[in-house]
Length: 93
Image (cartoon, rainbow, N blue to C red):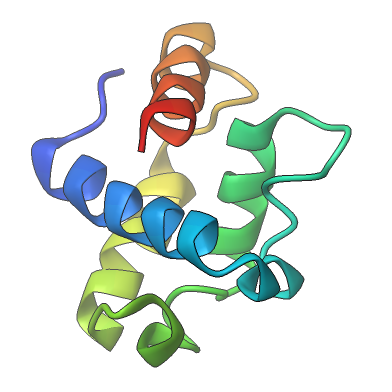
């Protein structure tokens, strides 16, 4: 599975926001964690970090739902290609 362009754009926006403001790491432990960053991002989406707090990420609630919906259907834990794409996106954003 490949990231859709819409989801990729939204994820880049969220990751850049985290990198710009390390205090946002309290919402998503995506920078310092010991697990795969792709899995942490997926967990954060599943735990509503993006759709419940869209103002934190400069996205709309709908855009947060788009990210969450993607990870409800596709999992980095079961798809190594997707995991690699997400981790590359996190690293490059």
